[in-house]
Image 1: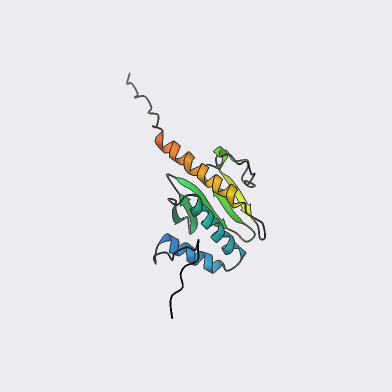
Image 2 (image 1 turned 30 degrees about the horizontal axis):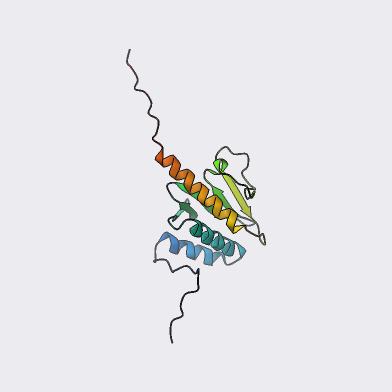
Length: 150
C-alpha cells in the first residue's frame, strides 16, 4: 500500500500534545456544522498570516495571536463566534462584524449554520488586526513622569 500525497491546502497533522493537536481533537469532537465552520475559519486565519500562533486558552477556547491576540473562536449551540480583540479599531468594509457592536474594544462575527463566510474579507480583517498589533508593539510606551516629593 502506497501512502497518498496530501491534498493541496490540507493541514499537516500537528504534533501530539500541541495546541494545534488539541484543536484538531476539539473540531473532530464537535462533529457537526460548528466543527466544519471552526475548521474553515482556522484555515482562513492561517492563510491570512502564516506566522500566526495558535493556542488554547480559557478552558479550551482557540486563540490566534501575532504580536498580541488577533481573534478567538468560540463555539456555542447556535453560533460559532469569532471575536477580534481590538475589532473596534479595525476597518470592516465588507460588514462582517455583526455582534458585540456596542463595545469600545472588541467586535465579533457570529456565524450560524448554513451561512456563507466571505474568506477574502475575513483574511483582510486578520491582516489588519496583525498590522494593528505590530504597530502597537513598535510604538514606545509613554512613560509617566517621576513623582517629585515635597
